[in-house]
Length: 371
Image (cartoon, rainbow, N blue to C red; front, side):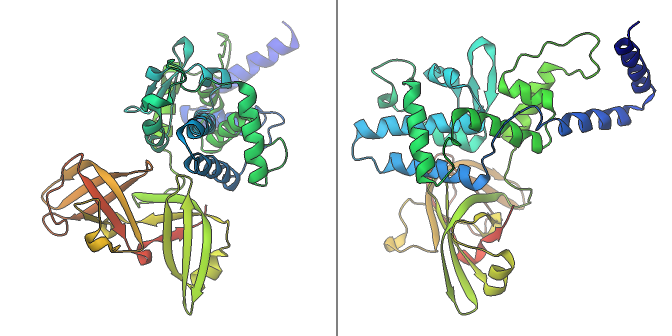
C-alpha cells in the first residue's frame, strides 16, 4: 500500500469516528474555504459596479430613438441579466429558444436537460421583453442570438461608461462573480458547480459526496429566496444614491434601482452622518408592508401624487384572514410591493388579481441601510 493510500485510509477512519454534526461542520468548512480557490484569477465586480452596469444597459435601451435601435439594446440587457444572475455560458444564452424560459417557475432550461433558477424579480423584468413578438430575430425562435463580438463591444462600452477598469466587465467575469457570490452566501462548492453546469465525476472512494438532485433543489430554494439583506420587511429595494439635499435637520435622499425605479427617503442629519452617505453609495431601502397604501386606479386623483413615492402596478395576489388583508402588487419594472392592512380598514375597494392599482408610500416610511 502506497503512502497516499495509507493517508486516505487513516483519514477515512478518522471521519467515521466523528459524529454526524462534526462531519457536517468539517465538510462545510472545507468547501467554503475552498470557494475562492476554485475560481483562479477571478477579478471581482463589487455590487456598486454590477448595479451601475445593469442600470446603464437598461437606460441605454429605454432611451433608444426607435424600435430598430431598441431591440438590440434590450437583447444585450437580457444577456447581461442571464450572465449576472444565471451564470450561463454565452453559447448557451445565444441558443435559448422562446420556450426555454419558464417565467412562472423562474427557471431557464438549457441544453442537455439542465435547468438554471433565476431570482423571481429578474424573471419578471425579462418577461415583458421576452414575450414581445418583435423581440424575435427575423422570425426565428432564438431571440438572443447575435454575434458574440457584439457582446464584447457592448460590455466594453458599458465598462468605460461606468468607470470600470479596462477588461473587467466580461461574460467570464460575470459568471465567476456569480459563483463567488453564491459561495459567500453559504452554498457548498459542489452545489455552486452544479449551478455553473460543471459535470462532476465522482469516484466511489471520494470522501465528499453529494446528491445532484438535492443540490438542484437547494439551488432553486436558495436563489428564489435570495435577498440583498435579511430583514423582516417584505419590501426591500437596492439602489444607488442619485441626489442628497439637506434642509435643516432633515435630509432628502433620492436613490434609483437597476430597473429605473426612483425612490425618495427622508432621514435626519444624524442618521445621514452615521451612515456616511454620498452620491453613488449603494443602499437598501426598506418599507414595512403596513406603510404601503393602494389606490384602485392607475391614475392618481386629479393627477396629484399622494406621496413622494408613487408607482403603478398590477395586483398579483390577495390573501385575507379574520385579521388582515395582504396584497402583492407587481410594478411595471418587475419589482413587487406588499401592502398589509387590518381587514376591512384601509383599502378603499375590494381588490382582485389583475386589477391596476397605484402604490404609494411616504418618504418618511423609507428606511435606509447599508450592506
